[in-house]
Structures are given as C-alpha cells and as structure tokens.
Image 1 (cartoon, rainbow, N blue to C red):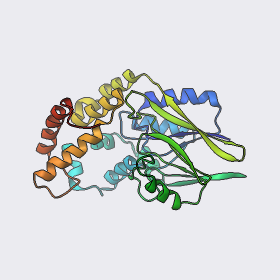
Image 2: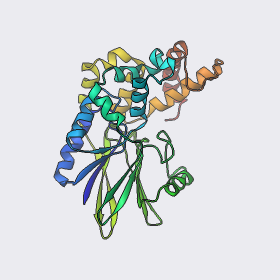
Image 3: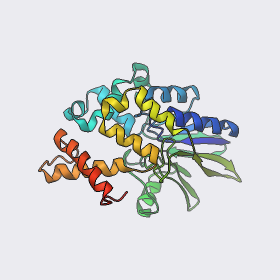
Length: 290
C-alpha cells in the first residue's frame, strides 16, 4: 500500500500538477489531502482535480472560512475590511458545486484498511483546525495531540513545514505544503506513505515547479490587481520561499492594539494600509525576524 500525502495546496494548480506528475511514477494506491486546498488563484480547479483522483480530503481553516462566508456566519467586517479582501475574492469565485462539496468534508478523518493500521488526518491539530504544531520548538504540544487520538499514524498540515517523528511506535507526519514550504527557497513538498515491515513509513519529498506560472495565474485571474496588499505579499512568499505574510498580519494586529482597538482579530482599513507601509520599511531595515 502506497499513499500520496498532500496538504496546503492553496489554489495553486501549477504546483499541484507538478506534484501529480511526480507521483504518477510511484503508482500510488490513493491520495490523502490534509486541508487547505483552497484560497489562491485557482481554488475551484484544484478541488475539481482532486475529486477526479478520488482523493480523501478534509477541511482546513481556509475551507472553513469559505463555509462561514457561504452560511452568512462571518463577522460583519469580513465582508468589507481590507484585511479580508483576499478571502472575499476567493469566496466570490467559488461555484455552488464546489461549496457543496466542501460542506460535506470533515475537519478530521480516520482511514481504515483491512489488515493495516488506521490513519488519522487533521489539519492543525485534533483539537483545533488552526493550531500549529512545531515539534522541534514545542514537543509538548505534539505529545498532547498524539494523546488525543488512538490511531498509530497522525497526519498534520497547516504549518507548511515538512517533518516526521516516530514516538513510542507511532508516526506523526506533516507533508509540508504543495504550494510553498517557507524554507527560504521557492517550491513545495509532499510525502509518500507506505506500508512496509508491518508498519507505516514515510518519505518526505521536495517539489520544484515553475513559479512563473503561479505569478501568471495571480495576474490572469485578477487576484493580484483586485486584492492588492495581501495577494502581493502571498505571491512574494511563494516566489521567495519566505513567510512574511504571517509576520505582517501579526504586525498589523499590534498596530491596531496600540491604536486602542480591543478586538484582537480586527484591523481597521487605515491601520491595515499604514501597517503595510511601515512593515516594508522595518523589514528592509532588518527589524522584523522571519
């Protein structure tokens, strides 16, 4: 049994196509996708491609954002604030069939095989779709996550960082991100999970793809022109393999808090735009650690 493990594709068709071209040589028995298929220039196309492969998918935090928009359950500022323009753009380009498909996905999935150990798939962690697991920095969080499940294999996504650990005979695995791994160079990653010698084993693989094609997708779909700040920064991170976007969001939140806004998840438009200008200056001066 051989399985391709993908995560965090983020509407990046060029990256997905490159991954599938490589995986085709492996003659895998199936595909598992640990969430965040959407939110990028070609989200609908990514979902469609994965459905044709009969991939087993779960909801990531970005699928959940789309569903909150669709259900009218999003906070009021999501529909107007510059801060959420990237998500709004993506939601408005979702078709009904794709949204209905996402509605039927779960945040976790347990996959059973006859005569082979079961696999649990989550996006962030078993307790929160948006929780980040960094085992080298915080082993206790990984240990807590493993205690929450009984399956011998636990697959994560969300952080875009590929890793695997075997702890007390159990395998914890993050395949990284097909879109971008934020490891200082452009490109993604995925994993091959295979059954050998009575247990699951994993091989992490780097993925190189034509990054110029994703820039063209940002431009051709209007994502770069219509959204501005967030899409520019997201594309920059894909092209450079860095993670400035998370640092920028944190910076904007701090600017809002210093201006007296008590809602820790909301940044007014004027502060968001000013934060972008100041962030660029401080980044250039080396005052922001990536």
